[in-house]
Length: 123
Image 1 (cartoon, helix red, strand yellow):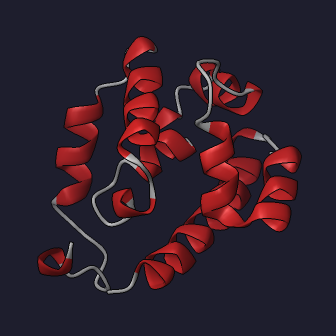
Image 2 (image 1 turned 180 degrees about the vertical axis):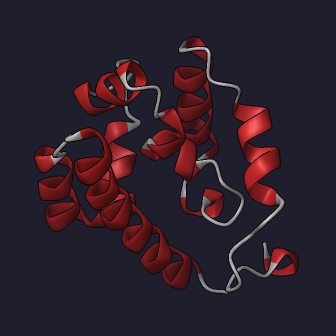
Protein backbone atom coordinates (compact mmCIF):
# COMPACT_ATOMS: atom_id res chain seq x y z
CA UNK A 1 0.00 0.00 0.00
CA UNK A 2 1.34 3.42 -0.91
CA UNK A 3 2.20 5.75 1.92
CA UNK A 4 -0.30 8.28 0.57
CA UNK A 5 -3.08 5.78 1.28
CA UNK A 6 -1.78 5.13 4.79
CA UNK A 7 -1.57 8.89 5.28
CA UNK A 8 -5.24 9.26 4.33
CA UNK A 9 -6.18 6.63 6.92
CA UNK A 10 -3.93 8.38 9.44
CA UNK A 11 -5.68 11.71 8.78
CA UNK A 12 -9.07 10.07 9.24
CA UNK A 13 -7.93 8.48 12.51
CA UNK A 14 -6.60 11.82 13.80
CA UNK A 15 -9.89 13.61 13.06
CA UNK A 16 -12.05 10.81 14.46
CA UNK A 17 -9.83 10.71 17.54
CA UNK A 18 -10.26 14.46 18.01
CA UNK A 19 -14.03 14.06 17.82
CA UNK A 20 -13.94 11.16 20.27
CA UNK A 21 -11.82 13.11 22.78
CA UNK A 22 -14.23 16.01 22.58
CA UNK A 23 -17.14 13.67 23.37
CA UNK A 24 -15.43 11.58 26.04
CA UNK A 25 -13.31 14.05 28.00
CA UNK A 26 -14.59 17.43 26.73
CA UNK A 27 -11.21 18.20 25.16
CA UNK A 28 -11.37 20.25 21.97
CA UNK A 29 -7.97 20.08 20.24
CA UNK A 30 -8.71 23.16 18.16
CA UNK A 31 -5.06 24.07 17.47
CA UNK A 32 -4.31 20.49 16.40
CA UNK A 33 -7.24 20.54 13.96
CA UNK A 34 -5.99 23.87 12.61
CA UNK A 35 -2.52 22.35 12.10
CA UNK A 36 -4.07 19.41 10.23
CA UNK A 37 -5.95 21.82 7.98
CA UNK A 38 -2.75 23.75 7.28
CA UNK A 39 -0.20 20.94 6.97
CA UNK A 40 -2.11 17.67 6.65
CA UNK A 41 -2.24 15.15 9.48
CA UNK A 42 1.24 13.71 8.92
CA UNK A 43 2.75 17.19 8.51
CA UNK A 44 1.05 18.39 11.68
CA UNK A 45 2.29 15.43 13.70
CA UNK A 46 5.81 15.82 12.28
CA UNK A 47 5.79 19.40 13.58
CA UNK A 48 4.59 18.21 16.99
CA UNK A 49 7.40 15.66 17.12
CA UNK A 50 10.11 18.28 16.61
CA UNK A 51 12.02 19.27 19.69
CA UNK A 52 11.93 17.74 23.12
CA UNK A 53 8.81 19.36 24.57
CA UNK A 54 5.42 17.69 24.40
CA UNK A 55 2.43 19.75 23.32
CA UNK A 56 -0.26 21.04 25.64
CA UNK A 57 -2.57 18.48 24.04
CA UNK A 58 -0.23 15.64 25.02
CA UNK A 59 -0.24 16.96 28.59
CA UNK A 60 -4.04 17.08 28.59
CA UNK A 61 -4.24 13.48 27.38
CA UNK A 62 -1.71 12.42 30.02
CA UNK A 63 -3.77 14.14 32.74
CA UNK A 64 -6.86 12.22 31.55
CA UNK A 65 -4.92 8.93 31.22
CA UNK A 66 -5.61 8.82 27.46
CA UNK A 67 -2.12 8.69 25.96
CA UNK A 68 -3.23 5.77 23.80
CA UNK A 69 -5.05 8.40 21.75
CA UNK A 70 -2.08 10.74 21.43
CA UNK A 71 -0.61 11.35 18.01
CA UNK A 72 2.66 10.01 19.45
CA UNK A 73 1.06 6.62 20.17
CA UNK A 74 -0.84 6.45 16.89
CA UNK A 75 2.26 7.35 14.85
CA UNK A 76 4.07 4.33 16.34
CA UNK A 77 1.48 1.86 15.04
CA UNK A 78 3.04 -0.38 12.36
CA UNK A 79 0.52 0.71 9.74
CA UNK A 80 1.46 4.38 10.11
CA UNK A 81 5.11 4.24 11.21
CA UNK A 82 6.46 4.36 7.63
CA UNK A 83 5.06 7.89 7.32
CA UNK A 84 7.52 9.13 9.94
CA UNK A 85 11.30 9.25 10.27
CA UNK A 86 13.18 7.08 12.75
CA UNK A 87 13.96 10.24 14.74
CA UNK A 88 10.29 11.26 14.89
CA UNK A 89 9.29 7.78 16.05
CA UNK A 90 12.05 7.83 18.64
CA UNK A 91 10.75 11.16 19.96
CA UNK A 92 7.20 9.76 20.14
CA UNK A 93 8.36 6.67 22.02
CA UNK A 94 10.53 8.74 24.38
CA UNK A 95 7.69 11.13 25.31
CA UNK A 96 5.31 8.28 25.99
CA UNK A 97 7.85 6.33 28.02
CA UNK A 98 8.74 9.43 30.06
CA UNK A 99 5.06 9.64 31.03
CA UNK A 100 4.98 5.98 32.12
CA UNK A 101 3.01 4.77 29.11
CA UNK A 102 3.80 1.15 28.25
CA UNK A 103 4.51 1.56 24.54
CA UNK A 104 5.36 -2.09 23.89
CA UNK A 105 2.18 -3.36 25.55
CA UNK A 106 0.14 -0.82 23.55
CA UNK A 107 1.75 -1.85 20.25
CA UNK A 108 1.33 -5.54 21.05
CA UNK A 109 -2.35 -5.05 21.91
CA UNK A 110 -3.06 -2.94 18.83
CA UNK A 111 -1.08 -5.18 16.46
CA UNK A 112 -3.31 -8.11 17.40
CA UNK A 113 -6.08 -6.46 15.34
CA UNK A 114 -4.55 -4.51 12.46
CA UNK A 115 -6.92 -2.58 10.20
CA UNK A 116 -8.24 -4.54 7.22
CA UNK A 117 -6.48 -2.22 4.73
CA UNK A 118 -3.01 -2.86 6.20
CA UNK A 119 -0.86 -5.39 4.37
CA UNK A 120 2.05 -6.24 6.64
CA UNK A 121 4.03 -7.71 3.78
CA UNK A 122 4.21 -4.37 1.97
CA UNK A 123 5.90 -2.54 4.90
